[in-house]
Length: 163
Image (tube, rainbow, N blue to C red; front, side, top):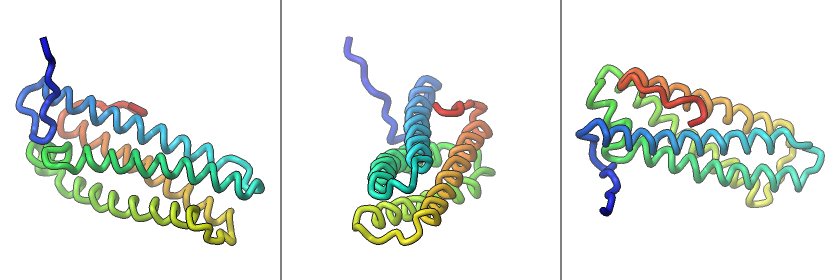
């Protein structure tokens, strides 16, 4: 018998559909966690290696950009988790709007850091650049925490730490 994928473009109408959708959210969260960890590792490497450090950070940020884009897609698409929470728990709408605004800010920041690394722009002060990226990673980790809290408040479902 052929199994069909749940329709994730509309809100879940059954418990099993919501469970399947939340599994997608968990997968994206885990990917985002792994990407953030890869950026952390790149940032921790010896900055004195210059070009090697920049290449490693670029690769990690490129993966983060991809996984962050996937995160935004699964949360903001029509019928996504933000629409679902807004419908089931309207009191959480202000927090969801803050999360959406952060998405725009984070995407711009990641793209900006990638542009500096891609276009051979001089990063005159690599320690300051590293500090800016480190700050962004911390903000993204807090964003994930708030997102997990929102899902818990709406559904009493724990998305877990890295998954």
